[in-house]
Image (cartoon, rainbow, N blue to C red; front, side):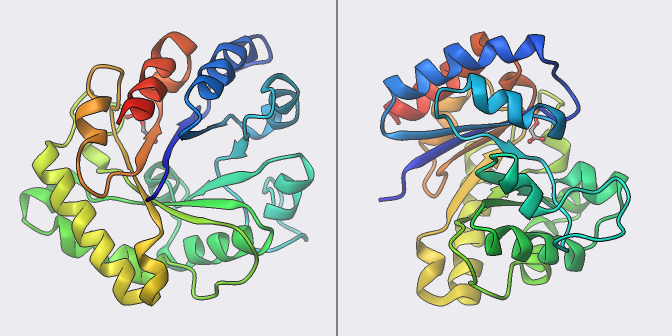
Length: 248
Ligand code: PGA
């Protein structure tokens, strides 16, 4: 049995004042002991968020593939760990697009994060054009082949997040049938690439997950949780998603 995992991705949002949302989120997480809950705020808020999160894991939204060096503006997995982060998101489609991150770059980030023992959420997902052309499964399989870590080094847990780009921040959610098809395809690919370890990797769905659609998504086979953007910014919107995972 894979435990449900619900992760909030605050993206480039949040402030010290907004960390007051973490108290009620952490309280809801404690009331759902069968669910793992974490929040990934911007880098600047990781350390103060930890102090406010009553033990709930806090993570980063990216890391560099190298441990240190002349990489202005970047943050390494070792630095995240030093700041108290327990997880990191890598390969989010916004970074793949805006920062031109290749599969190869994403792989090196994931490998660096796992080496530091961080839970590593590797994101994949197709565009609307790719889906309309009937290529969604092929595109996602290619992303996994190109960006999945090749080493099992370190003690970090690898997690996959399937996030169709057209569903992110749009209010459009993939249908349960589409999600089921893709998660089954991802599971098959993971078994192919990671052998027996492929069965234990958690696969999250992301893209406009809200309190009113979460239960339906969590009921889909091979959906092991959610990566939540907009609805993770307030406890009022995020807690119902955590509760749905606890029931599911
Ligand atoms: P959204 O974002 O929930 O706002 O659609 C999801 C994500 O990008 O992780």
